[in-house]
Each structure stands twice: as C-alpha cells, then as structure tokens.
Length: 634
Image 1 (cartoon, rainbow, N blue to C red):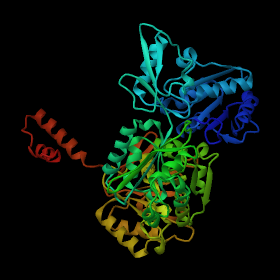
Image 2 (image 1 turned 180 degrees about the vertical axis):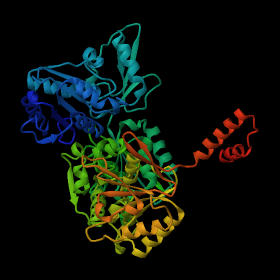
Image 3 (image 1 turned 135 degrees about the vertical axis):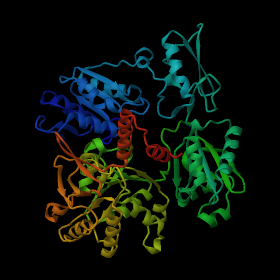
Image 4 (image 1 turned 180 degrees about the horizontal axis):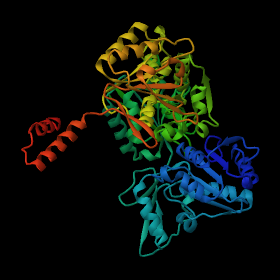
C-alpha cells in the first residue's frame, strides 16, 4: 500500500484529547484529518459515529489510523475481517503519541506505517508480526519489483525459519535479492530452500521473481484465446521465464477489448497495459521484424515487438523477437533492472455501482471495493456525498438531476481514457438507474448518438445494490412475500398511456406494487389515477406503506389504507408499496408489520385439520397430502 497517498489513508481523531497528535500525524502523512463532530476542533472532515466511519474506510480498502483506544478500531472492523492478504492496515495511536500499534495488515504496510508515525512522534511502534520482529523481513510481501512465485510455501518457510532453520538462497538473480540478506543462513539440519530467479519455481522451493521482462502481444479480431495462450506459453517455456517475472501484457489500444488478450492477461495474472499506434511507431527503429502490412492496418510497423519494447523502456533488449501463428503474435523484452510499475495505460474500467438507499450498512462489500479502487467518481452530487470517507480525496464529477445522459457519457469517456471510474447510483444501478443507459450508449455507434470507440472498449462492471423496494419491504416486514412488480410513475421517458396500461395489468393481476417516482413538483395526477385503478380490483382497506428517505436519519414510515392514500403526503424521495388483495398488517407491540402470504396457510390449516381429525378418530383427508406432494415437485 502506498501509505501517504490522500486516497489511501484515513487519520481519525475520536476526541479532543488526541486532536493535537492526530493533526501531527495527518500533516506528516500529507492527508486530511478526520475528526468527530463536536469533539475535535479544526478537523478537515467531520464524522458523527467513529465505529461507522472507521468501518466504512476499512471496507473501502483504505488504511485507518485512529488516535484512540485500540478497542474502538477492533470493534469497528471486526465484522469485516476475512482475508489478511487483502485487508488494509489498521493502526492505533495513543492520545499522547507514545505508542503506535499496527492492529492489522502488518505485511500490507501497517508495520511500515506504524514505524513512520512513531518516528515522527518520537514514540514506539509496537510491532508484533513474527517475521518483522525476529527476521526483519516478511516473506509473503516482497518489495516492489519482485513477485512471490510460490505463495503457498511462504507461511511454512517463515515458520521453519522462526523455529531455527536456516535459509539457503540460490538462483540466477540471488545477487539482486539483497532484501533477503537479513535471513539467517548457514548449515543446519533443516534448510529452507529459496530461489531468486526469472525461471519458474522448482517443487518445494520458495521462489521470488524479479520483474525484468515485458511481454507484447497482437492478434486478429476474435482470435481464439487458446491460440494466443499457446503461442505465449511456448515462448515463455523456451525463454525459461515465469509469468511472475513479467511486468504486464502489453498491446495496442485497439485491442483493449479483444477477448484473447483479456483472457491471456487474466490467465497469467498480469495487468493489461495499452499504447497508441503513435507510441508503438516510436519504437520502429528497434523492431526486429517491421511490417508495412501492419502499418497499413493499424498505423505502426509492429504491435507485439513495439508493445514489448514500449513496456520495457529505453533499456530493454528484444531477446525474443516476434513469433506468430495464423492469428496471433508475441514478443519478449528483457530489462537490466527490476520494473517497479508497468508502463502504458490501463484498459479503463467503468464500475456501475448501486450504493443502496443511503446508509453504509446497506452497501455491499463489492460496491465498497469498487468505489475504493476507482480513481474518479461520477454521479448525482447527493449520492456521492452519501459515500462519506469513500469519496474523500477522489476526483469527482457531480451532475444534477436530469443530467443522466451527460453523466453516463462523461463516465464512459473518462474510462475510455484508461481511468478507473465509478458511476454512483442509489439503490440498485440496474433498477430505474444508470445501468440501462450506459449499455444503451455502448450499443449505439458514434454516428447514432453513441460514445467514442475508446469508450466502447472499456471494461464495464455492474455491482448490485439494495434497491429502494427491498429497503422499504424490509422496513415494512415482508410485503414482497409473493408475486410483485415495480412501476415508475414518471412520464418523462415513458408515455403516459404505457404507464396506465401497465397499471391496469398489474391491478388485474393482483400484484403487490412498488411505485417509483410517484410524484414530482409538476406531476401530481398519476398516483391518484393509480390509486383509483387499483381500487377497482382490490379492497379499500388494502395496506399501503409510504417509505421516505430510507436508511437515512430523516427516514419516515407510514401506513395507509388504499382508499385513504393522498398524493400530497408523497414526495420524490418516497417509495409507495401497495399490497395485493391478500396483503395484511400484523399488529405487534412495536407497531404494525406488513406482509403478503405466499400460500403456506393452506399447509398450516391442513396440518391442523389432520391433527384435529386424529384426536377425533376421523380418517384424515388425502387432499392436503396430494397438495403437498404436488408442491414438492413430485
């Protein structure tokens, strides 16, 4: 983790007692100070609940530095703990700055971050990670420019070394692996075999690869993925180079959406990096096999060799020139030094993220991860504001209500430039939100109102969210327990006659209905018409729930009879749930709960009749049994 980046570290003070120390830590790391509202003066970012704020930041993949008791941070992140290899650092600092404790993520930057903070405060970093304390190195987290080729062996090797074994370090790249010099070496009964090499690891040998190669590939459109994979596999075997020693899969930008290239990068577990034709043509003097045919086709004299050279930089040597099959090409370039970061631009990704109705507890972990990984956020300003610490420090583009098309175009074009962009939607992005519009724009050609070719090549990820109808149903009880539908009453994009036709069909079908966009400042009649249509098909006392500002501090829930539903008590932030003819309210001590039976009552009543008949000595009817068998699929 690049600790110190504004988007990666949250420094938070819980009380005024630690405010001065917190400010010193934030300033030293070059990040804003997060402080609890009303308790920490001068904070750059205010929060109301320390547990929620720390949990949100952690869920977003950001390092959390809390000037507070360790227990606060432990309780905050405990529900989210799953995999130590992917969890961000969590560091606790005492109010006086004397003690800095890395609680989580020791091998993901927490130990280094704790030591950095302690040095600035003249305090003590209470590092407890065994490898760091006893050996001074973590074998499962090699430094930049190196990859662990045999991750399954790291834990056992560390345990053996801590128990008195000695390391035997070999391999063609051993002289480069100076970071391993801290390990105890020598002859003992038990040896831990370690190899530093660009070649694939041998069985039972803990292997580290220096990243010293750049792979370039090209292929015809819709090249079979197995053809490109086989070609690259043969070259790597002949070169005796492991995928871990390769910086990235490089190609020309027009191949950013090529299935074979994408599949290759995924199979090798390498990033995909792209160059323009002009950038590849700049490598023409260094090509071994320039081609005028390729130049006429894509604007450069070589894709595979040019991409490999561009990915390696000026010091690279074309040790393995272009190889080709009927549909694919590849080349391999070696550099004298390790590559700490791949060259070229990423493919670009647009994450269409549904954040739920508002509160962070209803946001999925996948949505939080995609938001944390995004470089830029695009959306309606209110929705981005609801993200709290997930949004802080990121580039954001706010669009007003009514600017949906501009919002989606902007997000796609920014992703088309190689950026990781999140399009932020409330609820579920695929339900009355931006998901459909994104794909509509992608499905259109540029001449028919679509987006640029670069935007059409981006990766698109859709993250589900808790929809407003789900949130309202959960608050109500279980009104969606049987068949239901959702209808938007906005006639901005849907003809009014279509809405009325759907209303009549849903009413006749006796569906539970969730009404989205029930009213606006200028549209006040459709909800009343919907009520009147429904009253022709279901009882006047059918329960209706009005749910406003779901999941937020201003949340308001109300129940009404269908015949008493008034338009004036509904606004744009309200979801209206209308029960079917079978929906009812269960009266409970804490208020009514709305539910729609699915039909289990027939079984329950049938079982009760059977029990009663047995008590009376009467033969039970076979009908309930036949019904159960039928429902069970027999």
